[in-house]
Image (cartoon, rainbow, N blue to C red; front, top):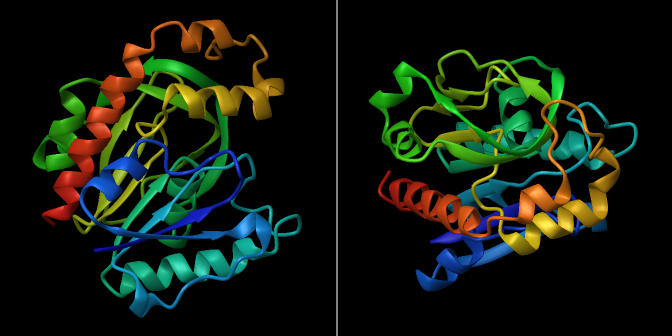
Amino acid sequence: MRIHYLQHVAFEGLGSMQQWFIDHDFQISASQLYAGEPLPELSDIDWLIVMGGPMGVNDEHLYPWLADEKTFIKKAITSGKIVLGICLGAQLIAQVLGAKIAKNPYREIGWFPLQIHEEAGRTVIGRILQTHPLAFHWHGDRFDIPSGAIPLAGSNACDNQGFIYQERVIGLQFHLETTAKSASDLIEHCGDELDGSHYVQGADDMLSQPERFHTINQLMTEILEALSRA
């Protein structure tokens, strides 16, 4: 299986997913868009992973590569690829599927529980999330649920946290791939966003229970295993 991921900043990579891909002998390639690397040929990949980043989906005036990236994501979806988007990646998928992206009423950073939608229980991914609905968050925007997609979850701070489309396209606003190391990298590079508001935890609180990362990484593994059977 050939995995290709789109990376928007140097400090937001595959996280715990990388080791799972390696353990299963998947071929991994990447486009580091922030460094000007090109997008691949669709025929050269089986899965597309779209990672997070601090920019917004409409910041094409600052990051011109966003336009080509959106076109590529749409082609990957219409061509039948498995597509997984996380945080910014989920927002990009939602937008190319016709949904609205907007500023969330609250910035949400840290460990907060998900409320799993009743409809989500009809899906394998939804049932996985029901087993442990605590997730790591770092976002300030939100998406509407695309037409034809099944909503997965919300939270007190953000009404829409995930969706699944055609059983093979998944958008997750929250992070299950984050490790203690990648959380520390986020804190280092985006620590100015830790403003002490209602849904923003401090750095020490986010890192104080390392076992939480193991738990969410296991959920991410179960999602990848489910996608590999799709």
